[in-house]
Length: 123
Image (cartoon, rainbow, N blue to C red; front, top):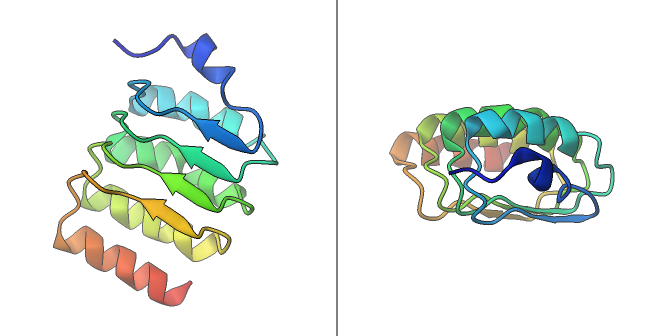
């Protein structure tokens, strides 16, 4: 079962947010994104090993756009597919501070990889 949201939300402060293996799903991602948008010092976000999927990536998209100081984003093992990769590509276009993006062990195929590559070439 997913982690209780109140305990999870207390982990969202400071420059480094580590939420690896908290079993976060797309529903919880909406609430997490709202809190992350208020974290002006966020530089590293690790959401690896959760269950975000494409809908969860869509939910955190506004927070990724707002986090202009974010340099490291871990989203490995999150059931992200081509749709999520395309959304991340849009975030990359506007967030020019991002230096590391970990997407391993997801379901991104050629279409998603091409969308990411196109975004990277424009950032």
